[in-house]
Length: 307
Image (cartoon, rainbow, N blue to C red; front, side, top):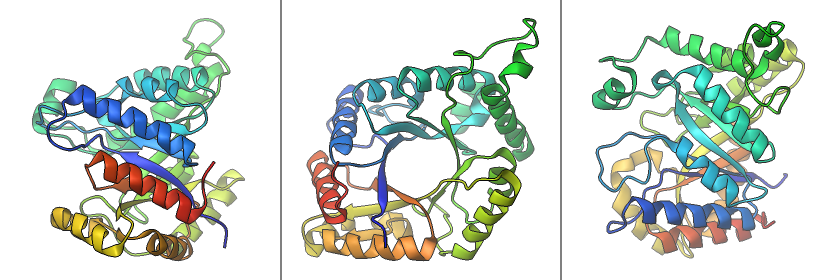
């Protein structure tokens, strides 16, 4: 079995006592380390919480910092809460950023629902638009990214710079094994499935993913990229990992893997077979910087992914 590819998902959560900028500084160092250790991607989330030391809310401000601090690793958002934004503005930002930073920017799109206050401040409305509007926005976003000649219209339309530039990788984010399949096929995008978010579907459902890939190929002539977002705690020994995990009992089944490097080596190989994905995106529940850095080193060594 081939070695699993692994990326990192970071919510920006860190230990108490650090302000927003100190947390952000730690995230930058973490992204740099992830690159050195051979991880494939470094994704950050979008969250609008009532927390005074929140590292960020809109991750778009952070992406250029992470991209400028790294050279090879892919940098992205998992994911942009598209219903809060204009698809045109998202397209213009991410396309330019992707071309400035060597075609290594990932654009993950989510249909999440932040707090009522965040919705009101961002959109001027009390509630988000219906699901059908999200699908329309997603299609519009890809139109702005891909259909350059239609947009230009012989000089009477608009250009999303740079003209004929590289379009970022676009990912549909889902906590279901099937809910976004039609979207993935119709829009010709990649699928990131999470099993570490609240209410996420935990079952393997490899047959559904296999069918999605085949249907995608029949429709589009190539296969989509797929990954699985996994919540974890990793330490040198099972005992230490279990002790840290005790702090996150409320996560329940969303804390998917807890153990030592050997355990991770075995379980990710098992997951690769059972889920049928190309890659893993690892979300560390620990908020301690030293524990997080150690976990990345241990996993990199155990999976032999060191760059």
